[in-house]
Image 1 (cartoon, rainbow, N blue to C red):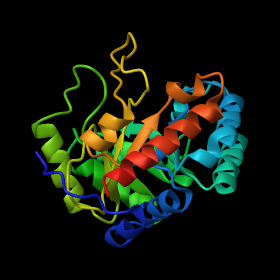
Image 2: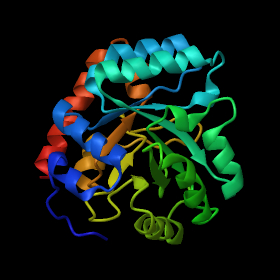
Image 3: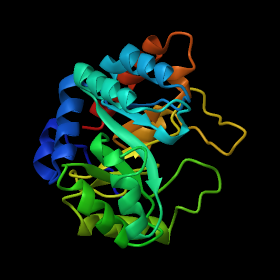
Image 4: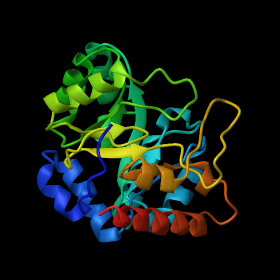
Length: 260
């Protein structure tokens, strides 16, 4: 259990990060005063683009599941990158790579989605061992991409805990130029160069009927000492997504400042 030390402001954490995407993320968070990541799990590209444009001012990251889009095409990626530039946020493809090195290298670099060409950040399970990081790094490092390790998950009954989580922390230490942090439910390390992003954050502390478990942003940031909250349905399913995003952004930012 980590002791609750004071957090370092994001602008000062830039110096501790060896990855250019990680540094850029901290700079965006600091300049926009937002530690909110929006997860838009919709199946229509127009809906996704509209949501990104509508709430882009409030977020530091937009998280996608590109393979659930029913109408994916290369023009969509062009438009998505333009919105990211317009509103100054990074693109995070929640691919959750989880195979042997040779396979994930091809999944990352090629295929239909060519993830490494447009996603600033992606993520991976560490079940296959360090080879998965090595393989992704051969593709992503030269493109100045960043990788998150799935150290913990928000679903009920997740096996990502204990020894698995500790192994993920140890792997991150071995690849500081490519691994920028963790998907986790709490702060796992005191290294300010590594970011902690927490999914499953929602005002209503309940869940869904498929194993998702929600926590409040206060629990995520103040109690569990995480850095970035990932909010999906709590924003894009609201009647006024921009108002909801603004409320999450302001509350999450104030919560982080209270820890500094």
